[in-house]
Amino acid sequence: MKQVKTASKKSTRNFAEWNNIAESVADAFKMDNEERDCFRNKNLAQLIAAIPYLAGCDDPGRTAITHLGAYILSLRIKTVANCQPADNDYLLKRLEMINNFI
Image (cartoon, rainbow, N blue to C red; front, side, top):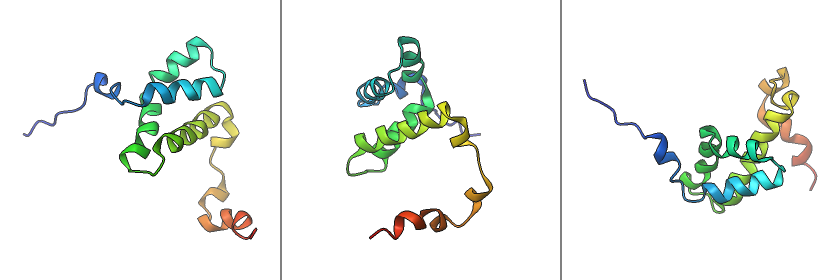
């Protein structure tokens, strides 16, 4: 059986932009020190921040901060993150209202 090498926890901390992104988001959400440390060490938050860089987005830092903001809001406002029957509707139906403003 072939053994698959996985990244260690230490390697996820090497994401060069992570500390700056984490601090910016923590400041924006006015996190206390305990919350800030918890957020900074959360692997899912780091993954969310890394994806725009890995995907080659034009402005990955801005995209990462935006996605992390949505993630934090979904944690703090539970009703936002709860699935609704309308979530299963055709995606463009949910975008119709903002799609026709021009």
